[in-house]
Image (cartoon, rainbow, N blue to C red):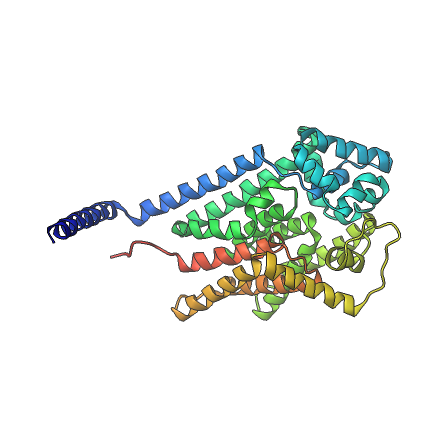
Length: 396
């Protein structure tokens, strides 16, 4: 009995001590200090991941294709271009990664062993003229492989910097952990380590969206158009924005000009790069991968189109996070509305545009990867967090 009393007494002392420390610590905290802490931790998070990306990049198959697209000048044969690209990657990639790239599956093996098949894939990459141009430019300053890696690292840093400044300027820095979580769920770390255009697209859509919310319509459309040049399927977003502008009776001319410019540019880019066309690309990416695109021109089939949609939906739900993130964001928006914290006209317009963008992109080209939907999801999260402005310490 005495022993139990002693234990209870010790527990009471420890509990009182913890409460005293907690009270002493919290009494010194203010929202300004918490804002500063949130921004500092977020900055360390971004910089830390970028450093990992610099020293531990992942050599993915798309790197080879983007490098080849940035290096081809019409004077090299398929064999010469193939040897040049794979030789560059072999010099830098770890043996395990290089083996995976060249022999990890039948598709990789076939394209590594057959230069003509490898080069036949490039028109599907050549259409991303903005992204190819940046890799080419940085590849002349650095080496081509370093230029490709630097593009991803700088894009990763830029996305983090835009989020940091957005939180700071609009006063929701305490939401930094939520922003970091959304980034990770959308594949931010993976994209920074690999060579894909999605982070760079996110940079311009993120800045453009922030400027749109402040009323800078023409500037935002210009930024969205740059995103389109980096990844042409961003035309879906420009159309979604046009629909939202019409629906909300907002200023229409900038969105209309942006969409029409993208349509004209799309026709010019696809014809100039010998792109195989939407259906052939859809079949390759969403129905059944092909070891070579030489002579591949399948007839359109409604059944196969629906098969591609079903496959995309199944893989998205099984292996990816974006469907869950969409549901969480929509639930958060509904809860804010229920609590009387409403989004203003422009925020509501842009949220609807992003929802249309996600739906349209999936219906037109149902790639299941989180990176595909990252721009829309991150913008939605930033808008909702700016509206909410969560604070850990209540104002007196």
